[in-house]
Image (cartoon, rainbow, N blue to C red; front, side, top):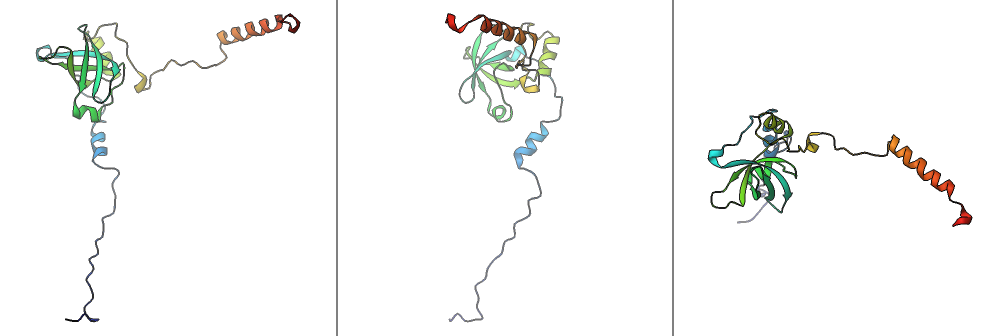
Length: 170
């Protein structure tokens, strides 16, 4: 058969839908976590759970934590939690102890600063626990040269010592 002017190749045109949304599935996941207050989870000693404070972040899903039963443990951050929650040094976490490895545990929950205050009020945490509030917008306790009394005293002392020094004496 000859290809003549009557037989043009067929072209299929695909029209893509317009992108009307904002973000993908991760955005919708993050939105559901912003409900505000969530239920406070207390430790269950029957299931081998304990409170701990993060001492050091190791590579990947591992961290070192000081458990409030007096033991330092290597803890593994569970997969789903590792993708959704950011854990930093000083955070208070709930861990699940392993029955077959006493020096290792699994992180199952992270407490926000207001939840830590509630746990302290309920006498679940020792009073010696220091709260890490930097992520919630708490004071970082940085002091910059604001011209305070201490800085003025240091400047006046250095100026006096400069006046006492004579070039000929050096």
